[in-house]
Length: 128
Image (cartoon, rainbow, N blue to C red; front, side):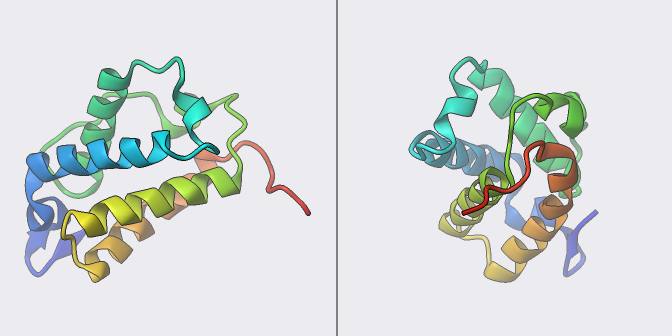
C-alpha cells in the first residue's frame, strides 16, 4: 500500500525512526487538545504509541506487522465523533509536515487514513 517514486511511503518518509518521531509529535498535539486529551487518560501510552508505529509502518508499506485490535474493536464505546476523527487527522497532518514530509505525501497518507473513519467514529456529528 502506498508508493512514492518507486519507494514505499514508509521508505520515502524515513522509515521507523521517522514514524516514531511523528507518533511522538502526534500525541504531544493530541494531549494539548482539550477536545481529545480525555480519550487517553487511562491509556498505556508506551503500548499505544508502539501499536501506532506498527499500524502506520504496515499501512505505509514498511516491514511491520500490526498486532493490535481492529480499528472497530480498539475504538468501540469511545463515543468518537467525526469532529474528533478530523481533529486527530489534522494533528497527524501537522506532525507529518513538521517532520518534513512533502505535502503530496501527507495528502496520500491522509487519504489512506480517512477511510478508517467508518470503523473509528461511533457517534454522529454534533449539530448546531
